[in-house]
Length: 319
Image (cartoon, rainbow, N blue to C red):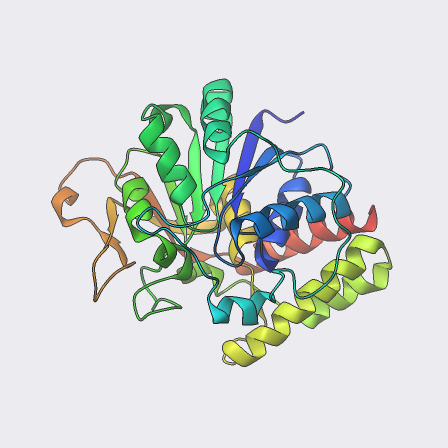
């Protein structure tokens, strides 16, 4: 067992599935649970997708918990058409995986996060890769979390590049700007892995061809899932020569911060139009001596991609 423990907070689409695989393939951390949120799919579908991916990878021992089904400021959520285009209507590239034998847990995602923080303290890493509604709710319920949790490394935001759903807004932050603002303005030890770096870590069909050649159930399924993702990127992001590894990069950075160059900032999220979801420095805290967010602005993409392929290929070969 590893000393470090990890919770993935996922709206389980394609790159979230790769994040699960990366966490499972990393010997320096134990994935202790997955909490589900909305975004690429609805929360219930995210939970089922996580269970299916875990079963595909032979890890039915890991529990999945359901979180909120909509943002902290709305009472309903509909998946955006662009999300369905990129991830497929089922969230995993229209690849049909068997219904998982394990069910989602009765305990809520928020209660699980709080219990895990109290149990593991500084050894706990939380990696949100969707809207931060669950984490913000946990923080509201148990403010002491900021002093307990070792690190929160989130995939979201854009500081030096435009957003991907608006000129300033990245999709995960845009789903619940108010929740993201609560988290970024808290005293959590935060690392932001945003579009600034995730759009520089790209996978191509050269890599999925290697997985397909392994011939295992997991390798073929992931090759099919990611090939769908690559095809969607060819339509929606034709300037990129592959698909972005948004969520698995966040896991990689959570485990090895040296993969990225960061700048320290005290940050906020704009919550009102026309700049809603913009992740930016908080002008009211510019002169504070310490900062709570390390913002990744550059990445050693070759080193990360080499590690990503080595770890996932070994995992897929066994399943």
